[in-house]
Length: 211
Ligand code: DX5
Ligand code: ZN
Image (cartoon, rainbow, N blue to C red):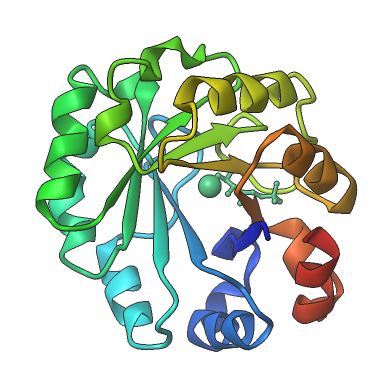
């Protein structure tokens, strides 16, 4: 079954600990944490101290999505406070192969994210260092945007590229029950959802409707 990774970007920031506990109870498979630097993307969110404080609230894996320039500097910051997966953007890594190896040196999973305009060919020679491929189905920076349909073709192309290897395909942005079904049909293993999980406050019902 597809895994659901709620993005706490849509949570109540004044009660993040409680929100994470409620997501765990509602059946979330992991917690998606969108780290933004106000530079790679025009928004600013969580730093390592916030993640450190949240770590004691749940045993669910922390799926840390770094939307930052120079992620190499920040990998130790997030690995040391309890990230289970660290995903970097291909667009900002000059030495992607090396960056992924650095993430693995911390004994955690590595991911690469692709913006909607980025071709998946850049993944071809780093598959052996990858645990997860994060396909952005909106331009990164904000929740609540509309799913970009062209990314369904990319999901299918990435599925073909990984050719049965133990690498998960995660899709992020504009996921709702309708687009979720399209992503699953195209080959997605994990769906990130902010708006669709938090809308109306019925987390369990919302998560179930995405599966
Ligand atoms: C966008 C973030 C997403 C965001 C998704 O840059 O990477 O994780 O929270 O939000 P929704 O599900 O509302 O599109
Ligand atoms: Zn994200």
